[in-house]
Image 1: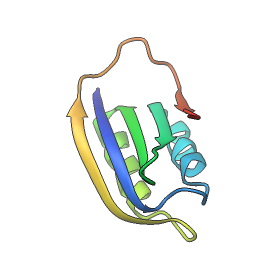
Image 2: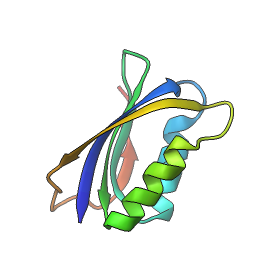
Image 3: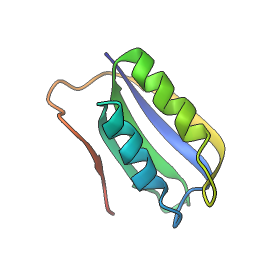
Image 4: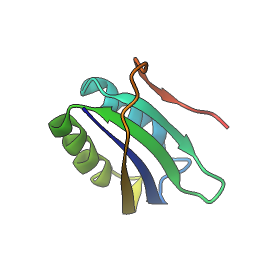
Length: 91
């Protein structure tokens, strides 16, 4: 079980990127969250099987038009024990 915190830069707000991210996570049975930031990036935490998380990261970087990912920063963090789903956080 692994967990990563990520920041996605590019054209990722106002283009359905959070919904795309959530769908990818649900399909891979991953948990975590995704949200827009005031800086114009998208931030997320994702947790699950190492190979499923790696596949999720690859797919995020290959987001289709109108989204365009220019950078993905990742940090390995401690997994959570009580998380059961992946959600969008609206701020």
